[in-house]
Length: 299
Image 1 (cartoon, rainbow, N blue to C red):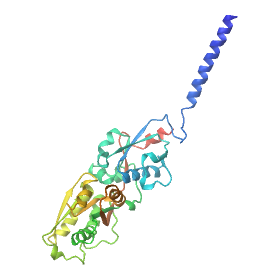
Image 2 (spheres, rainbow, N blue to C red; image 1 turned 180 degrees about the vertical axis):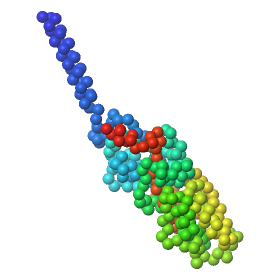
Image 3 (cartoon, helix red, strand yellow; image 1 turned 30 degrees about the horizontal axis):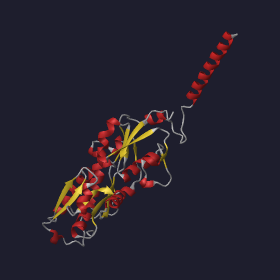
Image 4 (cartoon, one colour; image 1 turned 180 degrees about the horizontal axis):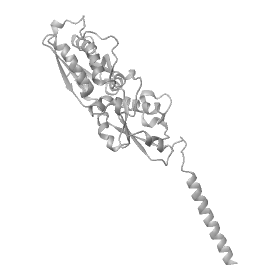
């Protein structure tokens, strides 16, 4: 009798363990947001500055990889992700360093200027790329109060020239797109170019494509005996601080949402005077060379 009772106890215990195991197997599913918590983590690098991170996250949302909180727009951060079906981990890094981060992440969303500078072709090498991105047109800026100075207007006219528009089209083949609607001959009739003879205009720029584009403007200004001093920077901060403190006359490296956020965060007073081109942001493969890892992780 005691033997039978002991056997029943053991049998019931084993049944309970089996039931718990089956329940655990059946629970490898989604959390409240519908995410696959047991799926492989897919690491995606994004820029860590406010507007470019939001822009990267919006690109991921547009392609169904994540879903953001309603209404966040260009202020979005990774904390605004409300649905994450592919178990994506957002890795924030300085925009300029994202190409170097590719070996350590599955994918990275990279600004085209840094992609091109790293030898990537946004049209051919990106796995996903922005469509219309006119809100992110790269701009020529000066310190507030200098918007109509002869130097500013002369540089603006040179960058809005047909020569520059043609250079952008031929050189970048869609990786960079001119947004100047009515290109000029490169000169502004309101500017006294004789008075600017022998003068130097200083401009801060990122290496690619901005400094390259400015080389075309440099030739236009040289024809009027004006020197364009192109100072190259590899970050998104110093080009603005040197304009704000008067060290240089202008800069050409950023889009308007970034400038507006920079002014608000740093108390700077920098103004946009012209939109020149758009650089579509793209998703590039790191450890992964296709988008297959994303579809696999959601299964």
